[in-house]
Length: 419
Picture 1 (cartoon, rainbow, N blue to C red):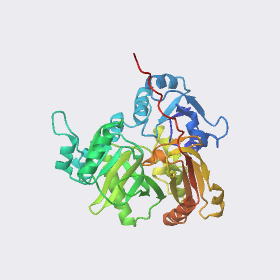
Picture 2: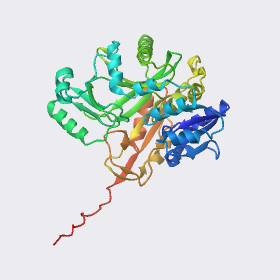
Picture 3: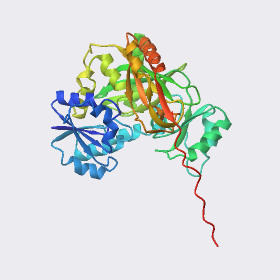
Picture 4: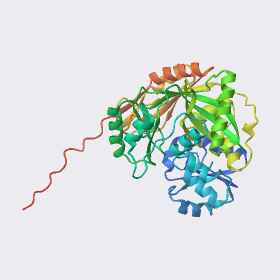
């Protein structure tokens, strides 16, 4: 009996293998590049799972591969990039899963914004031009005003997101977006300033449980680079309960009836506002933090949901553990990654800090404005999320991500003159 994982987040594969084993299932990983999971695979026993290298953008090819997998009983797709391919495979093989139409909706940020606006769950609509009508610039200034956000309807990792606070920034963002390859469409929405959080939820049969809230400390405007995360945020109980009820309504409007969700939101003077909804467990070390802070392997709930079973975590009272925090480690300048200095000092710092590598020496680091730029993650623990944050930041201050300039390719070759 097998559970298939279509690619995976950078971290969490080991927890997923152990969860599948405990539930009597064999985990099969479909991946374009096993090297991407070198950190996790290097910490598992040989043969702990089946790794099948295949083109994970080729749904037809993967369908043929999965028809040769012994008794596939469920499929897990925990990344934004492969969400829709996973939905298609699940439908083709008749496996338990959300309606693919719901996943297509959730991956369209403009459609989500408009649906929530119609249900009275956000104060802002999406702004998109229509054929033959005014352009995005004119519509944004008329309907949304400034400041506003321009972003990709299917973007991930804070990529292709622009805060525009005046017309000069608007024109610059429109020019920049014209030179980008978007995963979806460019649209605009109001900018809701305030502290950013992410709710880690589990939904089954239309009922949503709030497992906890992660804080999100961001870079200064106008960038939206994630830098520090801590879990769980200590909301007073009435506020936590109200937040859980609001999240349940948000997900219900979208038809999101089961599985994990990672809902990014802002707390504003007018109440919470959705930033985006991801139909998966949180990325980076959010899953690791959930496991440690709740004291259970939350990936068992992921496997159970893939099998079509009510996750036991919906009803359990987890024993609990330490609060956690992590800092994304960016280099000071773009370049070729040469190494990470200072990790030997971590043993002398409080909070049991640890460095989780994302990139390897020799990798190119070209983008420092979004999550493509971090080379690793500095993780630490504490009795509260606040103390865990202090431990993680102190440890991160001792570590330096090192790069050297990109190789000089030299002047362009001269073009031979004719005649």
